[in-house]
Image (cartoon, rainbow, N blue to C red):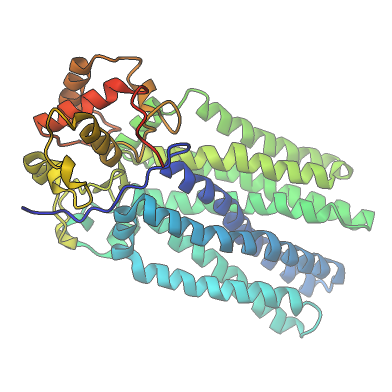
Length: 451
């Protein structure tokens, strides 16, 4: 009997494994995006400070660098490994697909990140201590290295949604998977978003400037930068939506809540209005206001955008061939990967999965509920809560239906055949479909599922 290379399923009943990963990732995105945007803004400000011989501006760059060291690089360095750890246990095969395709790109990104970390230290501690030419060289190396990290990561993120070229599946080549219409739009959109986040963070530093005239100057300067980045970013975002595959656009229209798009535009309008107000009245800037805008960006800006990006690639988690439940759903000749759907349809997941307990490998009247629970954990729990809590709880998805026969017909008619655009095709034997239906019909009465 052929055994697919599946891993144990990590089930977190309160939030779901995807949300644990998502919460860590959103915090990391705020830190990392702010750091890249701030690197670009700091490089520009350092250049102006040196060429115009403005020591007060150079001191601002130094203070901004200290903030980045504490906020972006410490927080980013903590949440970065957190993403790797949580992704490893939540989506091991999805992460494996990315590593096998882009391990050397990631290694290159880490080299640039090392240069970036060294660069921010040098930018802070060499301010006013070395000649202007050497300082500018440090500033530009820091800025370019920081942006280079973003270029590589955005390419990998774009591949996660959809490989850039269809030829990647048969011919391979990291560049074929890397570059597509969506990649370019993503790079431009995220660059603008990063500069906007840097302007918000820069206002937090500017609010502490004691000299009133310089504080007003920096507030207005950052307001212009932030407003321009926000407007351009919205235009590039619209372009990026137009480059999405048809399936991704359909998911955006049908699966996201109705308030999603208005929320994104509302937070964007709020940020533009905030910058416009500071441009007109820079004295309104206070540390509490600047901090509140950073929190608002995290909660109302980054979280919805990242959620949308995750939703667009359903039911896949990587490269349009690895399902969110870790099943390989498509042949990828370039990687020597074969679809597992036919194998699982013939053998059943209970017999095939290497980590299913032996007593559950054959369904019988005495173990149907336990077998159904095992099936729900393997096939469903990466995206659904198996109770009344967690993401998209199964009790709500069933709309209160407790009829096992009807649920079984739904499973065979929609899931086994793969007739739902946002759901993976779930190959089940007749015995497995019945066991899963009985388990789902008993929710939330069946409470054996635990951490």
